[in-house]
Image 1 (cartoon, rainbow, N blue to C red):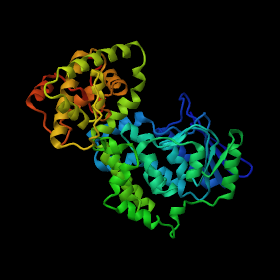
Image 2: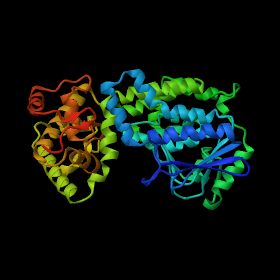
Image 3: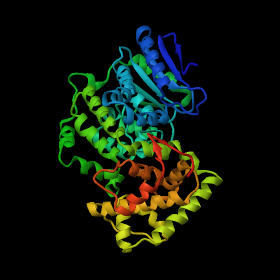
Image 4: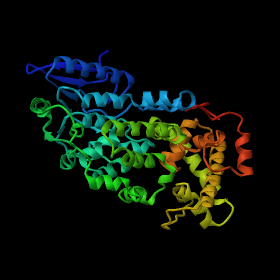
Length: 448
C-alpha cells in the first residue's frame, strides 16, 4: 500500500503527500524511507520542483521508535560498520534531498518533530502553517537519543549555534512564529493556502543548501566557540542540564561532541561525525532503556493495573527508604548522585541543597542504594516488567537513565555500568535472580 501519493501539477511541480495507512501519525519506518527515496528520485528525473507535505493533521512526528528499539538490539549482534550503515540511512536520504537538482520545499502542516523537522531542514525551503501551538522541535534528548539524521549539523547551521543549543539539549518545541523569527522556516501560511505557497516557493527557489556553496562557512566566532575548552560548560549553562546529571545521560555529551567536532567541518564530514557518535550512543544500554520505557511503554501507565502497580511500588519504596541504614543526609546525597533525588518525596522529605557535582564515592553509594531499591521493587511487585518500569519512571520519579528498576537490574546482571562494582550484598541479590531479565533489548519474561 502506498505511503506517499505524488501528484504532478501543470507547472511541473510535484506534491508528495505522506499518509501512512493505519497510523495516527507519519513516522519514519524502513518502508517510508524506501518510498521517499523513490519519490525523490522520480521527481529529480521528471519534474521541475517538489513539495513534501502530509495527508494527516501533522507533518512527520519523527522516527519509528519500534525501529529504534530494533537498532538497540544491533549492539549485541552487528559490527560497528553495519550499525553505522543502518543508522545513517535516513541521513543519507536527507542528503540526497538536499543535493537534488530541483528545488524541494517542505509544506509543514502540523507537528514536525525529530526526523520530521530534520526532513524539513534538508529541504531547500520551508513553509509552515500559521498556528499558536509549539510544533517544531527535536525532542530526542527526552528519550535518551539525539537527532542523528543530520539534525545536529543542519540546525545550528540554519539558525546559529547559540539558538540551536536549547532546542537540542532541552528538546522543547517552538511555535511557527518563533521558528520564523529564528530562521527555521521561511514563511507562514494559512492552512488552506499552505501547499499553494509552498509550490510558489519551489518555483522561485534555486536548489541547493547555502552550506554546499564553497564560499560558505560557519562564522569564525561560532567555530571558535565550539572549539573552546569551555564549550561543554557553555552548552550546559544554556539549558536545564546545568542543575541536572548530564553525566548519567550520554546523549547530552553526544550532542555537545557532535557540535564541537562536526560543525567546523563540511556538511558531509560533519554528518559522518554525527553518525559515528550515534553508533557510540546506541552501543550502550541507556538509550535503549529510555526509548522502551519513556516512549514505547508510556501508554501502560493508564488504567487500573497501573494504579495498583503504582500503589504497590510507592509503598515498597517509601518503606525501603525509611528503613535505609545510615545518615539521612548521606542517603539524600547518594540518591541525588544518581538522579534519584525525587524518590525522597515518597517518604515525605525533600532535599533542597544545590549540590550538582558528586564524588565517585557518592555515585557508588547511590548506585548501591538504587540497586537495593530495584531488587525490593522487583521482588514485591507481581506485575509485568514493562509495567513496573514504566510506572516507576513516568509516575514515581525513578531515574529515567536506568529505564526503571527491572531494566536497572538487567544492567547489573550484564555488568553494564562502568567503573563500579556492586558490594557483596548487592552482588548476592543479583546472583539470586534465577533468570536474565532482558534478552538483548527485550524483557525476557512478562511476570515474576
